[in-house]
Length: 142
Image (cartoon, rainbow, N blue to C red; front, top):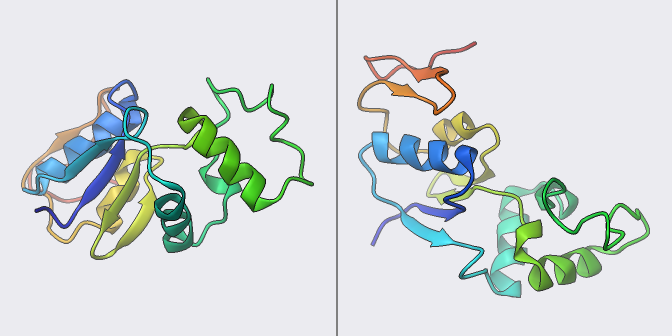
């Protein structure tokens, strides 16, 4: 079993690029398509705690019922926000990657490079044409 897990949405370019970067390191992660197989409450809370970013940092706004549900209300508790994510998994921002080196919301996708145990094995170009890793496996900074 892989030591790397990605909570993935195959319809998301950032998620696809992140998965590509993981595979470019020679790892085949456990892929959880979280819209079809959402994390249970304990797992979701564990991911949030492991990231150390707070609940709101994991909330996705674009293309979700965020506004209709009134989730911008700063009076809402973390438990209420988690309840909303449990009821509507599309509210969980992606991709979240778990490795032995940490847990991170990988936006942008190259954020995954900081938590991958193995180096990149070659070049990687994102779907939009941006070179992220050169042919020698070195991160390219914009």
